[in-house]
Length: 249
Image (cartoon, rainbow, N blue to C red):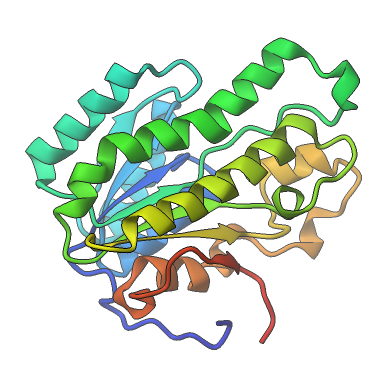
């Protein structure tokens, strides 16, 4: 996949919603999707950051994006229904959904994990992707070729000491991806996969590994090939699979 070369218009006329679009990998994917022709809906909690991404996309000459502020930690089922209604009214369908937003929580033994923080991590990393996907399924079904991508992690595939709520939430999200893929494979245009970005130069990585030299890891915009592949028509037919953004061929 490192050798994958997307066509310049691989995402032309696609409507793609990206969560956590104000920073890090979310901002990079939003800008990249737009550069390859997509109309991107930027979802995040910090309007200032979303506006910066919006401005960068507009100045690049890419299709005009949209901003939808939402705090996933406190969002109710009605908030997700309202979002879906707004997207339906403004765009009429959804061709792509990238679940990128997540919070790390803390690296602590399970027996000492703060219960309030546990609930927050599960709300953002697990419940929010479920509620958002559920609300958007009717919109995704209106597409001729829709792609839902969950963000995975190595600690979601094999548990690791002290990764607590984050690792467990990612393991559950991986199972949710597989379940959705199995349910939607027949009679819908929706494919569902996950992607593990690996070690990337982001604020979350710096929090998890404060002693690590960030320059040993790629910047978010250096790992975009697999994201483009999964959101574009070239991955049609691929569903229920786990991909690694930095996997070597």
